Image (cartoon, rainbow over all chains, first blue to last red; front, side):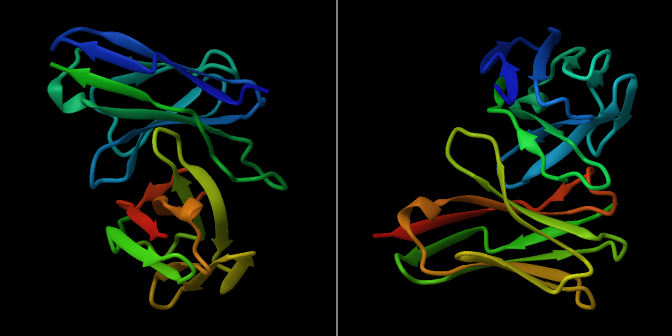
Length: 115
Length: 111
């Protein structure tokens, strides 16, 4: 199992550009989520999904869109990049459910810089 | 929403000594409290978790305690080793998958 994979590892964008951060997991987990990590602020939840076709907003959703067409993939779209979106982005997945582990498995992260 | 505060932000300990990290949470409905360890350049990894119906949980050199009345929980690492150097995050949740994280503690174990 590859676990949770994220691409790209690094990305530089200009203000106003759009892009998609890719996330995939091969563990058949129902739950997936996106976090951003900023110095001194821990990890903040952007969007999450409890299964294919179901997504919901987290703590800091503005400027980001998600979709979940398959169990495996959960891409994060930046519609019009802003310098405030400079951050490290982590995708996570979890089996989550009665009788299952609630552990979240994190990908290696994408470091995004918006100039 | 849930607010999780974590202290200290940095912690330096001598190898072999103990390390303690404390977190408080605001939502009394929270019932799941995991701790994650993040090594440099990697994603966080779960090291231990506790539910609100348990006061203490131990796994080898790490332990977590929970005080529901005071709404705080702590991570204890005994006999620290160089490989314990990392950033540690506490988190709280009332539905298991929507985690609210603390700001993190950078632990340095001095040889």
